[in-house]
Length: 265
Image (cartoon, rainbow, N blue to C red; front, side, top):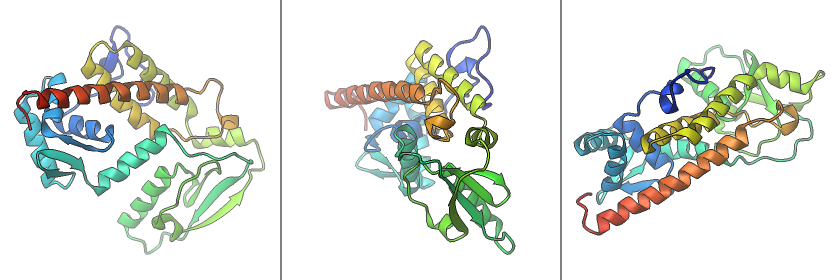
């Protein structure tokens, strides 16, 4: 998915954003990641699959494979996210309601210890953790961001980095624009917000909302003083919150249908 793609003339909804159709596995994951607590009976997940024209048998096969792969737990006809995916849900929740603190102008800086002797998997884990902390790499081994976020640092970064606090000599907004492609992120956010407004079908809305949530994970969550004017982050969060309310209502209806005699489970 290209973050610079803001739509194709003459096309609407997910197609205009070049979003791939969701698979049965993606539908199950997106539904559970967007639901609190992340546990639902099979009948509700099957009904969501029906919005996309996916047969019940296909959804149930996907559920079985996800249990075998360690993505889901299954008990009493219900499916729940495993620990790894619970961590992903927590990151998504943080992207929608970030814990921030007043910004004094300081930046947090991480200097990575020499990479010599560290296996590739360890280096990959470090880079992933830095991205999840929303730090950007100024040059190899040097990561930084404004010190406006309140979140713990995992062991993988505290053990491999020296952490400092400092302020840039030049314009901090110019530095932020160098570290993050803010214009591209904003264009994509505006396109997703507009597409959610125009989505004509529940499946289209679901697909676009899933893409919006993934995009929010890439929001650098900078202080307002470092952002371009009319930054669309909060607008996209509000639009996703509207979708989440719709999803909760839909799932309650599906569960009620099951309790009143619709086959399922």
